[in-house]
Image 1 (cartoon, rainbow over the protein chains, first blue to last red):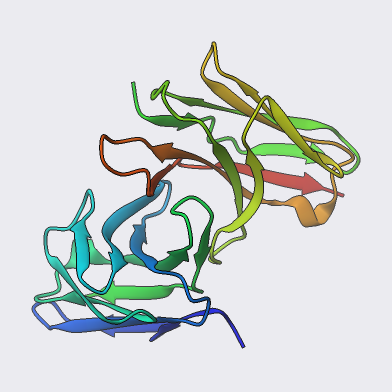
Image 2: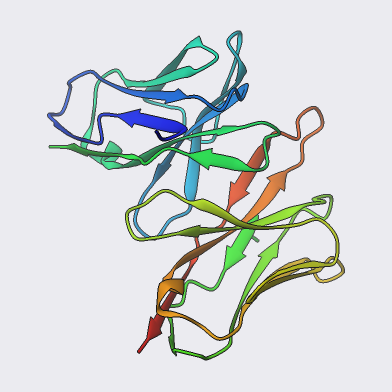
Length: 111
Length: 113
């Protein structure tokens, strides 16, 4: 089984809808991250969490929120999806912040 | 200057060739560096870590030049399976946190038969 899993893997939704992307890990890491990737651009950090009680905004947090339900689970929500949030979303975990292990990604399309 | 810059490529090389990518970074306080590999539409995976002047792993060699603030990745005897995008990763060194990294935009490599 994969160490970092993401659900759903693909999602098409309409503008204005609320959507949640989920991430689970079995690596036992405290640090978890949400990134988005757009074609031709690097990974951009949305939110990161060092433990259940420590959540921080990344460089592009506007329009997103997160929930760290447990050490192993970190969810990303789009409260009211808009078309420019169409992207590939990755969850990652890390023991030290540097070497990161990624989930398989969620391809989100907002129409 | 952007925090992490890479030549986007694409680099198109024949099998067996040697190819090198460069990555420049702006934060002189960074101490460790990483190369990740990302296959098309897949998740990035750690390829190599660089903590001192360089690192070698089989056909792959990473070198660090702190004075000029760049990292290079050299691939010898290129294989078709090396075709991917290579991401340069640099820690974001802040006053209170060393737990974030910055991903470069990536360099695309295609190895041609």
